[in-house]
Image (cartoon, rainbow, N blue to C red):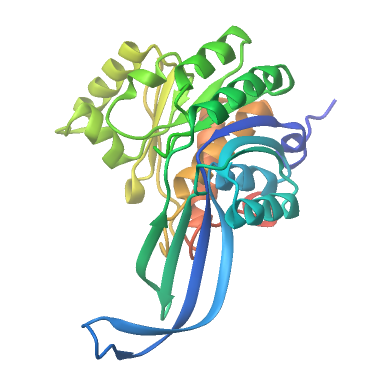
Length: 311
């Protein structure tokens, strides 16, 4: 029997995504003068947009190529949460959002003038323990029906119980992919793969002198955390997979970089879908690299569509 093409196999990929979600808002306008009140540009807003951000953007990247993500997260009981619900439904993403009345749903507002970001304004606080505990119980109940787990950590408090989640997923034999945050990676111990970018990795292992030094530091980190693999995204240098085998490097896709916002979400999202659909680690890295090359050519958080990725 002829194997199905990847475009078809990803449709059966079931990925459970848990983490910090946010609403990305964009105000677009023209800049024609400087404010008389302060030396800042005046933007005359002509258009606004909303997009899924954080873990919701991870799920959006998966759904955009035809897979079946399930999203768990905590939001406030506010207008932004209702807007997230609407956008998730419009993209066909199955979600379970826990309302915490004490929480303000995270919003990142970007003001764009002449196609350049002028300022970003963040609205956020951390969820309460009660909402997080409820998410933990539902996380365990959904594990049997998923192929891969993604834990998307943006440091907003939505993954306070990440150690327990990793333990539960390991007990069920599920691969666990983590997009890390901060300089304490001990909380990710036992995961299958983590996906730091170059600067995030430097925070944890220090600066490396050359490739062999980087390989040594990556091996030490993998062994100390007991993880299978480390995928380091390296901007214009491409990305490198460090595992028990020799390092596997792929060069950056040659294209103009317009906006790197959300590229890490694309990488881990496509990695998870490809692993869930039967691709090897190295094959998944190549697909993720291609998808990232597509989204950085777009403004703001964005996704790669099937015709772009598979043709």
